[in-house]
Image 1: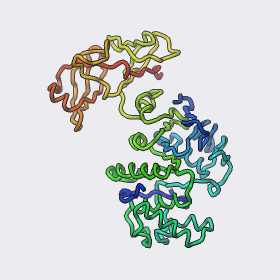
Image 2: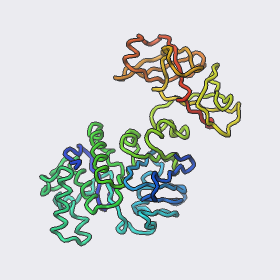
Image 3: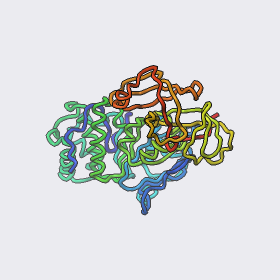
Length: 396
């Protein structure tokens, strides 16, 4: 992206080593923020059209002060469009945005209170590190000496005090990213926007950066929105996750809520790994899978008995029945079709005879596999705990 720096941009490579750390339902599953006070950021019925294409469709969302929220979804779901609308870079077609009780819907970016980190570099190559950080402050007519002092404080905070007089080209990618983050925070914005800041990094650096950015966010208590397509980033960093698809919000919740209680098959499939089993609803607590009747947690309202449904279960929730499994009534014999060693667990592909050709993925702890001598072709008795099964109307 080639945006003129508004506050900060992200740069790929390296980690932020040295940073000093001194339920809603679809459609439009927008959570009204947590807590008793008014939300810091309120989005109401936001729509965005590009010609005849509607990128955002009546999106509503509330974010509390100090929250770290991730917009998560596949490419083209509208997450970056929503972030850019909040920043005023791509104004909405209709709807309103309020920040700290102030309607900013029609304000240009320069009059909004945010710092932003883009996916690409946006440092000025002809300015030193400290001048890059002080750039926004001097644009706001802060005295040069005061701006330099503030910039030096921020560089110290991100562990780059000794790099102040270098130019961006003399720094590693990770160091440039830290400069960009410092610049975003220079004006003490009320809102920090991160547009896939970690996507260009290698896996090891990305893991380290997650913790560093989250620790810094907690220390400063700055309301933060991060766009990502990486579910692991969202699960490990966010206080709440906003899952998007096709310009609408599918679900808003904590990582545990999104992962453990997805509202529909899309969320179930997008977050983590999930088994999808076709079945027929018997009643509000029982489903027929193949030749067996299984009990589930219930809560499937408005679906008539006899309707086609989809039963979902996570691989880690498929149990090897040692006689103590709690899933009464959900026991079955299965053949181990495949068994792959992952490290601390084995990923098994199980073929229960009673499920008539269905295959179950199961994550089995390594000690259990070794102690029970489970191997390919081995027959095991498994259980599907009823409280771990999620049932949805079948998608036609």
